[in-house]
Image (cartoon, rainbow, N blue to C red; front, side):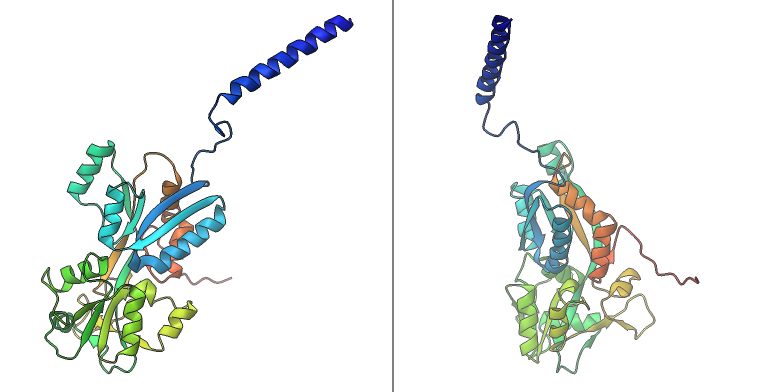
Length: 308
């Protein structure tokens, strides 16, 4: 009996040693390595700098919901975001335009599938003036004249000399592709535009709405003591009607410098990029856009009066 027990024990030990020896031949941590998913992993994304405040809020809430994720955002010009996507520096970008047909064809040939892209919300380019300025109501013709350099003594601040979504949008919308006047000055960022206009009475600036339109943000409320958000001519309203950028004026087409906020993701599996893309598309992400005073594009939030 003792001999049988000894033999069985010897066989069990030999089997365990064999399994351990086999496992030691595997690459380190292969047995316990977790696959990237919407709730786990690290990715880098590129975001148009003019959308930084609202995307920072999206990332903060996503991280709190999925603590094992790490989405590292770099804020840069629109052209740089598309270069990152093409060069495989990132799998997800947030910009003010979608992929063109030639770009879609390029990715289809390279990847054998089309990247996902969708409008998540509608933003606006806000025109800001110094708080002491007497002129904060503009027709589109007046803005075009300022951008052409026709009015002496007025400095127009942009968030970059070229390649930014704000520069591209304003140039296409107001100048129809023509060059800016010599009075148009490039700054390093949207915050730099706000700071310059705050300190110069004869300056106006163009920035994304999420930098100046959040009425719950303490920093933005403090900035509004030094700047004013200009009213622009409404092209769909009765003559002489002017509108400020807001959720309502964007939604109803009353503010003329409204623009989309696109998310583009280059993943052929359900990874972290797809998870963040879906998060912004669904209720919680859409509520964050709404809370930042942008117009959500995926879900219509309506206010109803009820009796209890």
